[in-house]
Image: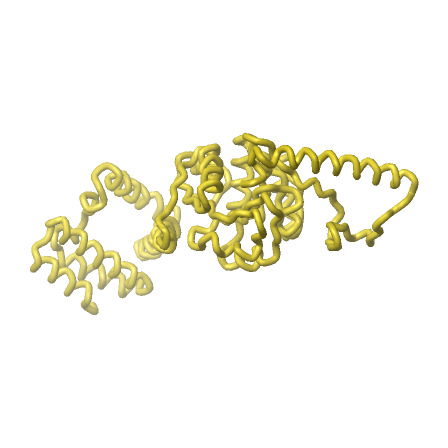
Amino acid sequence: MRAWDEADAVIRRGAERRAAERDETIRELDEEGIDLDPASPATHRHGDVQLPGDHAHPHPHSGPCERPVVGIGGAGAVGTALGVALDRAGWPVGAVASRDPARRERFRELVPGARGFAEANALVDDVELVILAVPDDVVAPVAAALRLYAGQAMVHTSGLLGAEVLAPAMAAGTQAGAFHPLVAFADLDRALAALRGATIAIEGDEELAAHLAEMAEAIGAVPVRLAPGSKAAYHAAAVLSAGGVVALLDTIREIAGVVGLDEPGALRIYLPLLEQTVANARALGVAAALTGPATRGDAGTLAAHLEALTAGAPDTLPVYRALLERSVRVASDRGALSPEAAERLRTALAGNP
């Protein structure tokens, strides 16, 4: 980013000296009770634009080899976890923006020194790098409401969207990118622990990507750059790895209810098996970790399952069928099933007990 370039240091020092002299003059006039640019009490001015709020405009500029001042747009699970992680890693987190006062104050309690704003457009006066940690569907409208200054950069945390969605906020000398942690942000402490060793997909030109990689490594994560055009598929796999597993667990919970198990009981019985399967996949590979009737050609077992689910948990039938059809394919591909056995299994899955 230009704000970190050695060449800009001299320009910045001159600008800061002039700003200090101007501020001193304004202070002296204030002491005399003279207001050169009055505005209503509920507003402040930036140049010719009158904006809501009542705060100064430091327009911070980090020096050469210094880390940029970061601002987080969004104080939800992702924004708060990143703010805390960066702060603990020694990156200056200067501000947070959230329309939810409770979230905003919680963020400020966890990240001392961060200023809080209701609107994301207030961040650009306080920081050099804006991280938009907001839902995918609102990244574009939030970016459209912002205007960066030369030397600033903005990234979003979406696993799906490209950096081009931030184009409305860009100006000469600004940069856009993406910073997507592959972490389940269901709980703050667990998310912070999971960031260590997690993959973070970064996007941006070479200069910005280098800074984002440094930021990822600072919080203990592993930065990766995706091939152009691959982000949607990357994100689809991520969704199945997190939300897809939860959907599977919910299906298991519903089926276990037919047996008379409540959710804690179902998790106590079936989670160890799931964890063992994941461990096997890590150690042996995905195909080798597959066990069960699909590897043995037990068509009668599948038919019995379908009969039980039809009677007790009919809403789970599409999930069961889809997963077992995939299991038959995996078993066939690894050579565990003859073509005839695979066909018997598919016929059983297609039946209507």
